[in-house]
Image (cartoon, rainbow, N blue to C red):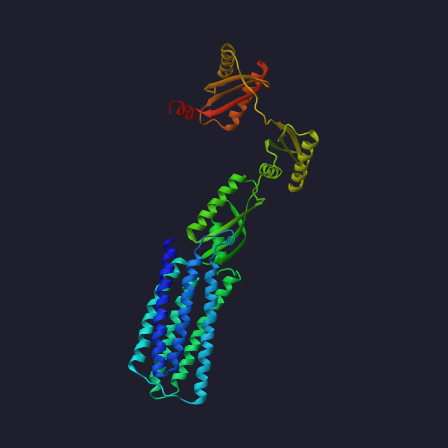
Length: 465
């Protein structure tokens, strides 16, 4: 059992013992004095004992973890307990009013105002005050609705006890004051029951907690990357706020980026609302500042077709978009063409206006080729050629990490080119592309050529780390 559960159980058990003591004391004194007001307080205390016992059992059950039959946990047991307490409060109030009206109709009865009658009422008020304070403190710390209901019970008991005390004293000069005080007690009890019942029913019918939706909207909206909060549905299950939050994010985000964004949102929510169980739903949205390249990548991701080499040209008022779409090399041309045509039609529909989309089908291999080593003389020859080509490009400082092997697809050649850190990427791409073209002219047997560009500082740190 957690520390919070132990605190809830302990304070509920002590309240049960306090209710038992007060019920017995008030019943004895009420029978000895004949005071209907004290007897009504005794009946109220007996019902409080039953309610306190129910609360003690409820908080123990409510803190059980979720299981297959109760996937949202057992928190609503506390609400059911509070609802039963509401019924008991109304039953008590109705009985007291009936008895009081009967006494008023029949005429006054002798009521003995003794020191012990006054003493038991004063003692009751002291105990009620201390129990209400303790219950309210633990209820605030744990969010327990059942304990809050008990605190409300004891608070209303203080007021009703005060009414009984005044009634007893007034009985000395007005015999009917005891019955009138009993009616006042009943009204206090029923008012407490109404307030408790209204809140309990709201929880049981999943009414949204006041301010919860606005609070969640505020927290989530502050997370960078959230375009807007579309919907928030929240309810209380015991002390836990259970909510579903739907947000809109850029459709250009990858699945990994969306998951990272959701993790940030959950972290922000749990910082402010630790007792919460939140489900986040992210829906794609076309943002106003979305570029054509972003749109292509977003739509292609929807069709699970990776794309590369996206290019956009403006020709005579018409935007031409061209790119390579990667498909499984084992697909038939009919299947591949069907997929890229759907992608093309969707893009032309999404990008309203004069747009032309051209897609190159690029097959992707899913098998591993076996590599074979090549001779040292062949590697030396390639290295000499590469260094000669690089020597004519002042922006390329050097090359290293040359790897060469043979395969069914031809020679596999890869190496690293070192550039000054300030060289623009566009210039780097231009130089590596020129280097690749020159190598392929001299070595047409090259099947795969990978030129990895990196700044000088990074390479130096890696090799001399």
